[in-house]
Image (cartoon, rainbow, N blue to C red):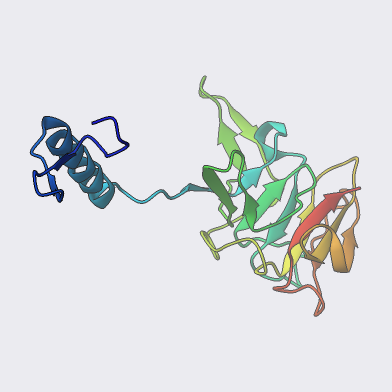
Amino acid sequence: MRDGTPPALQQKETGGYTLRPARSVAALSAVVASFAAVLATAPSASAATSYASDACSSAYNRACFRIHFNSRSETTQLSQSACFASNKSIKDHWGYSPNGASIVRYIFGGFPGYYTDPDGDTHKGMSNPCDDTGNGQYATDNAASAYNQDPSHSYTVYSNAGYSGSKKTIPKYDGIARNLGSGLKNKNSSSKRN
């Protein structure tokens, strides 16, 4: 009909309208039903999460700054619990999203004192290895001490993400681990390479 009446409606002789059986209506119904079925069974979108305890690009982690899960030993002045290693500024110890579709969470991990390369040769790594105490714990708000093996840069640990709040600077490599102290112990959220 050309009077503006939708084609799926047909006029009866009495002037009323009724739905006319048409293939287009059936096809439209099938499309709507299949679309609803797809939506009902579609998996929900969620970001893939991975975990990293090593953000240090130094060969065999020899020149890294580390935050440790436990306090340092008073007798050895070393921190040997699980650690998070880096040789760059970390704006948020929680982690980051590199592309909006995935998440990288920073955690404490264990690192050996020696590494074996693919040729079977052994190389000295960290001067004091990170053991498994605290392994797998989140790095943010869980560190008690820090140790710096970077010979060129000091690092500052902050209580807030984005390099703000209470802070403590760990000098460039001097062989001594430092406890973060009451203002930062288990309140670490970022670290900046100076």
